[in-house]
Image: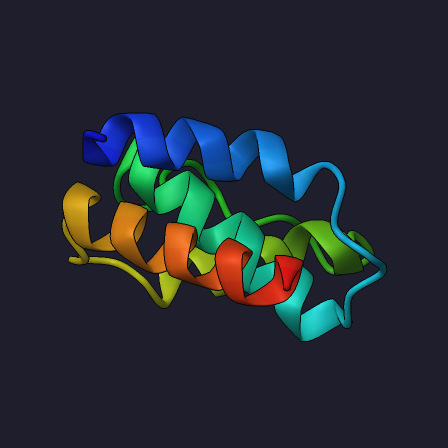
Length: 83
């Protein structure tokens, strides 16, 4: 199975995960965004948008990570959380 197919399968599987910690949710979000959109873009959310700011910061930590590496890490993370 291709990496892209594994990534799409993991994305579908992520919708049915048991409840996760905020840290896990931020990792899932950041890896997905890095794999699908590349490095973080756009302005950083403002002071009272705590959720948006946390997501932006988690994604920005992955700057420079290749699409393929982000996909591999995303698939591995989802598979580890689903078991």
